[in-house]
Image (spheres, rainbow, N blue to C red):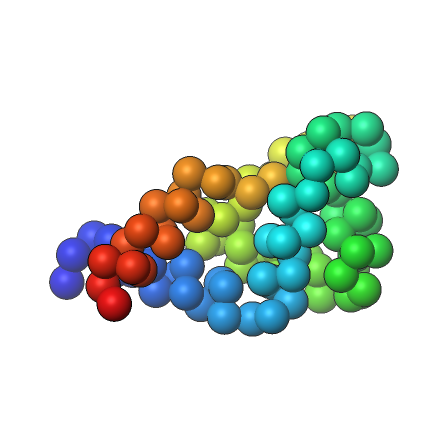
Length: 99
């Protein structure tokens, strides 16, 4: 087993859920932030766009963070989430090479 297999497995687990795929999709939107940033969204913005409750969004964000697909940073009282585009592209390449 190579080192990339667990990462790919975690990636596949993270994107298997339709809600997490919706979250990743809304994180691609430019200028959708309620606090004026060009890329990324705070948790409240994500909740509003994907129509899920705060605990559910937190659960999904934890899985996406653990898989390395998003990064989180504090912005005042808010957690700010952005996609990690390079890792998403790398995992997509790895998946294509194995199929």
